[in-house]
Length: 426
Image (cartoon, rainbow, N blue to C red; front, side, top):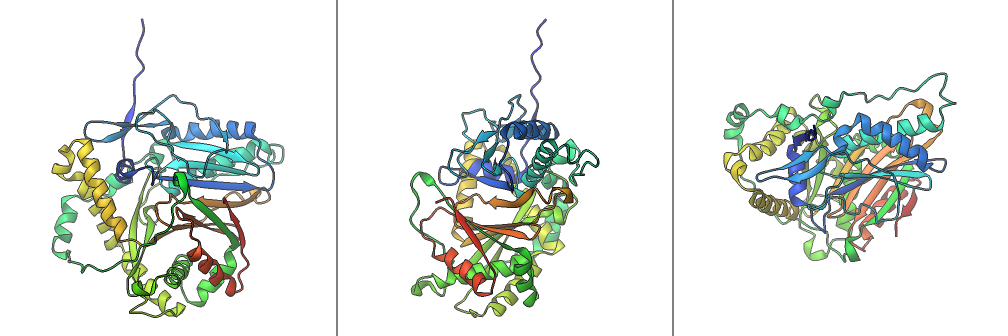
């Protein structure tokens, strides 16, 4: 007697619904994480490591499906295979009529990379997958060296914790709505400067990596009594302003900054769990002096990173999804409204900066790993940062040929005495 296999499915989290609805040929919603070793990658061992990793992240075997009202994830029996890198960086992954996994694992020379469709996970969630993959790769390749003492991997969440929908867990519902009902304020419309340029053919992106000493950059940030993220944000804003047309010098610059909500709400999820804040500065009304820019950004970050504001962000995101009218709309109409809203947000943003922070692996691996790199999904020019040991990599991703802003950025750091090693995919 034949029994049909039971199909398992799960709902998308709040952010995943947005990415599924807004991807396009110009914005594929794909980002990359890479780990560079001191020795060449062995693809057979990498495949063994992937086999071990996928058992601990079965959620990554999911494929994206379209329902009448919502997208959803369906479990599959597709076996992921490592691939030698031969496509453009962050090439398309999801296609609505194809039943494919939402990530890929690549290798090239001394580097392994994972590329992820953002509906599957955010940067922190994907990093946890990547760290596990690197862990098993090194454990298998150098098993003799670790035979006496097996290193421990810090991320050991259960499978249910890894796929947890933390947006839904921390949504306060009606209680939140009553709290913030009287706090809504109308914001005056303002002119926001948008970076534009000549797009590459076939929607390719320019990736430029700057590797430098994390300590050297942090020491400079501490001179201004600020954090690494604020320091780099201030330099980025000044770099953009230097290249602005004179007629637009009075426009505001707005940086979109992702917030890893796991730092503020208890969660071990490997799915999406982040929000974003917009940080604004107007050089027409302010000063070009770096200390004054940093002082302004410090205040903006302090206001946004409070428990009250984070709850506002999270509950506002969820309240749209929970709206009765939105819930009964057919999926094509939902997609239309989400894309319109996304375009409105896009027009109010100049650039984006994302800092994954300090990546920690077992100390026994220090002699095998050179650095980690993060490449953001690129719709507009974006800057992504991560560090491992004393190596910090600042990655610029841009769909435009023009490079003036990033030249200004790296020149500013270089003039502070910071040595930078530059590499590019073009």
